Image (cartoon, rainbow, N blue to C red; front, side, top):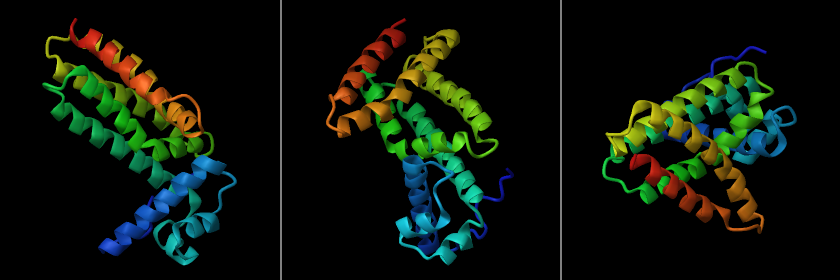
Length: 201
């Protein structure tokens, strides 16, 4: 399945930019809820409160919308991690842990939709693997910014572990929302303790 250009017509005005964001948000929510294959363009337009013509004006196909969603997810994660790397010097481990977990909660909908797309849209599953590597490198850079004495190898190993912990955050948040145990506060404490051990090496 080939991927077309993500946006057929780039929005020129603020209203168009907002409409594209609404369409992407609707697509992300529906792909995460129902899966890529069963979600229709009509459902996406309805969820966004837009006409089907408006949807096709910006995204000529479901594949194009999926591609744009994946690109948005990658860009959001990279931008937030880059910002955190700038703020990392001087941040105590609990604050660093909170920032990382808050980041995962902010991109939760995009991450869930990216996971739903992986098995259905060609190319995305391979690109998610490279995204994982890039994310780990950024987390390692954050750790080294927080603790310049930390060796590169130790930062890379810790980043891999932190990456695995962060993957659990959306699932724990969902369980908590569904009336389960309040596990997100627990993972904050766990990650803060782990980061403290890492940066004190």
